[in-house]
Amino acid sequence: MGFKVAVVGATGNVGREILSTLYEREFPVDEVVALASSASIGKQVSFGEDDILDVQALDTFDFKGTDIVLSSPGSKVSAAFAPRAAKAGAVVIDNTSQFRMDPDVPLVVPEVNPQAIAGYTKRGIIANPNCSTIQMVVALKPLHDVARIKRVVVSTYQSVSGAGRAAMDELFAQTRAIYVNDPIKPEQLTKQIAFNVIPHIDVFMDDGQTKEEWKMAVETRKILDPDISVTATCVRVPVFIGHAEAVNVEFEHPISEERARGALRDAPGIIVLDHRADEGYVTPTESAGEDAVYVSRIRRDPTVQHGLNLWVVADNLRKGAALNAVQIAEVLAGEYFGKKRTNGASNVTPLRRKAG
Image (cartoon, rainbow, N blue to C red; front, side):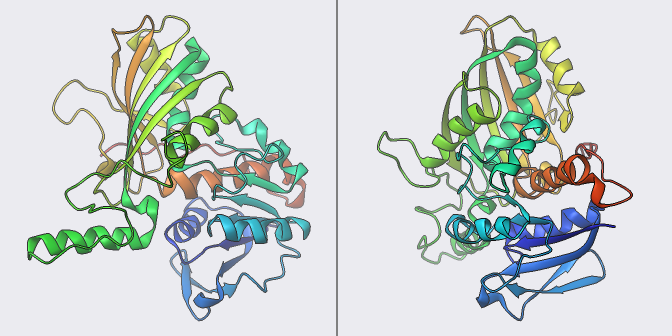
């Protein structure tokens, strides 16, 4: 016996990736329902190689009998529907920012704090962190266990897919326009993205940081350790899929490059590819379509007593969104819903694919 799973926002980038990830990882489903706004009625989405799902309207859908909802529709939509789905008995795993800092909603990265999933009983909702936070805390967790992190300084290089399908189309259109000498008028992003970088993701806050930068700090503290100081600069770059991060970490205790490299290699969900030679590191293009968080450029920071620098790369649509949500569902199914079916799901760690 499997589960009834609803995917909200099924026509978007992350929704489609969730459907693909559920199928690839053989999540135990009896029924999958694709939900989106009423404007998507009549559309179809794929589930695996053979199954085509008709998109149903989220506004009128009855969640009674649904076990798990995997949601990525936008914060305002989540605020309206998620409590309704939870009241009907479903557990909502939400990929928006709406519930992340709610003290009664667990914020979970399964490789980092799977025990927090138990808190789903308070509201029936589990929050998926921000894509940039996810890949960073996966890399930080094994290092924090070894030497305890005091402070993190991170600069992100975030692909346009993080801003949605329309932003990806804008990068493509602007790149073509430059080659044919057509005028460029930014519509989805604040400035030209083709052949450019934009140090602005999400809205500006009163203190000068953007909300994306604020998210990385507060989410890291909620997931990993409330005593860690984090400062971020988040930048949109002309890449379609895959986020990269330059991470500077200051520790309370000594940690050598060798010990850090070993801890990272032994950690679930991480692939270390770190050679001090041409091509001895991973770039966003190489991470696209992969499940792992890749760590490269591990080296000592000589400007502080106990410091390291890292280069962290991951597919933001997979580990940064869809995969993390499905992994939460796997733990939920195996550890908390196990009695519902005879071949209980296991606490599955990410696929450890070989780097190309």
